[in-house]
Picture 1 (tube, rainbow, N blue to C red):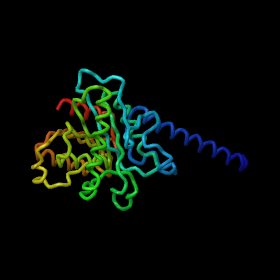
Picture 2 (cartoon, one colour):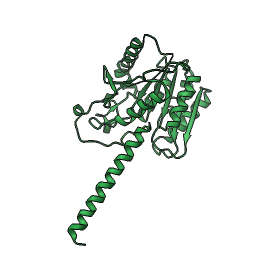
Picture 3 (tube, rainbow, N blue to C red):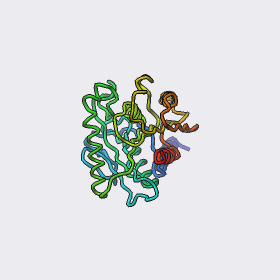
Picture 4 (cartoon, one colour):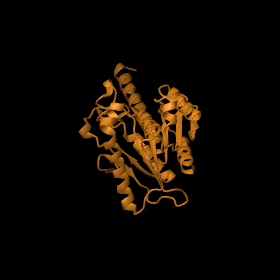
Length: 275
């Protein structure tokens, strides 16, 4: 076989492999899984070229994505989930797969979803331009009131449309969004009915400080044992909650990495609705 034919054959094989990998990734999203922060990679476009919300998902004011199933079940509390994304490089579209996955879960498990956008300039120095959440005290003083007001306005819009209020409101955080969600929970910052943190979350405050928090909604802590970046923090958070007798549920998935599994989502929604 001459060199030209060998080169052509290699090009065909490489193209086929690329297509197979792309199809496998899309299939995982279609099944409702939520992938890690950077799994989709950067497409090289600018922030203005990539809409924040994925195609087919409604955008409310402030680039808040919203998914409301055609009908919510009557046999469980009418539920709203506020989903906090991980760090997102501007223009990358990293947020699309997690939001699509949560949107699919909303339809499957019967809850309404809002997925707001974080702020730029609040992450650590090397990611200062990324979309993230105000986890530091200084960033919280500067941005938190406006961030939360944006969520509450999105909630109001959905409740006004339906003509009724949600029975339960939960905050779900993934990766760096989980660290911010746990900060909100451990400061008693929001009058919500529960929290779920996945592949992240921490107890950055001393137990005596945490023991003074009066508002203690239940917390679900989910992580994968193959997640090298967050598993230790998740275990420490669960240990702190146990020590404080703070109602919580811990769920570790042996073969999962930096992700949210369908089983964890089901368990989180069920646990928080029952609590």
